[in-house]
Image (cartoon, rainbow, N blue to C red; front, side, top):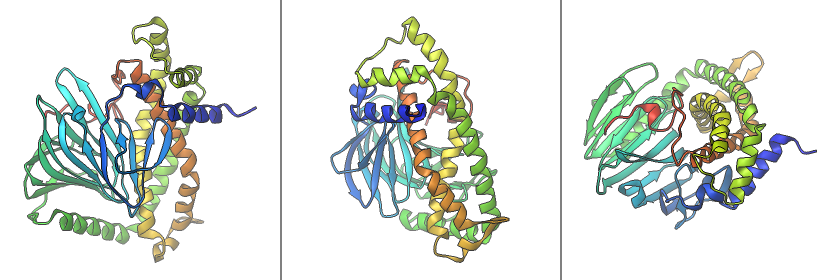
Length: 375
């Protein structure tokens, strides 16, 4: 007999391939207008393969680029914004759109890498946010960029208009020609240098971050290895009940058949009561774990082929061995994460598009987790 978790993963892939009810009426986030190198799109638990010019991308899609990759997305009017979003090389990001009485909120959940954008708002009061592990950039019509480093630092810069940067405790205005950074366990800090060339400024900042990592590589790698092991186990424990859920298995079958359940139906309410806490527990872990995972993924270009390969993280474990271990576990881990994201989508479908999981704390809904700031 096929193992239940494998059955559920395969079912998720089949449902995603048919697009299902979860995507039947979704408005697109935008259209890919330019691609370089290797870039992939993951949707509803399935890797759709290479991104191509003319492809539509949707809310909750993940865009992932390789070291040679770049994707430019022209935003759809359903996001409330006009303009384009550039996802640069070695980046992993989720596309987000939510709607409430205040209007449309769209944006990016940046796990690792760099993005840039030039945006203008349409009618009404739309907003656009870029969310990272420790800071949020909010814009309403501007040209800006956000970068993350292997050290967990965040750079937010603006070259036209104005950006608001917040870490949940304070909000800092970033006008054109300026930048702020957020380092782990530190407050937002304005950078003194004026920005004449955003690309060069960002590259210098990233180079400085990599050099800082190299100087402190043994300690930094030991911390990565410890956090990865702890979070991997926490995620596995939280994920197990979801992958065994009879409710989720039925939701996947319903979605493959194109069934759209009523959000007020008594059976749906019972299902949500069963699955909601499982999703919530995974969110709490995954909010940090995904970011750690993709930062480790970025380390390959810094460590492999250099003397840092032989750095001993702990007795008997070298840096190169740690990276190989993470690589070996990557496919299974990413399939589980994709299935979880699909489960989230199915939950939202039964909640008329709202996450409906109050009190979740870290890893809450994209906008709620960072606070509902009015940028």
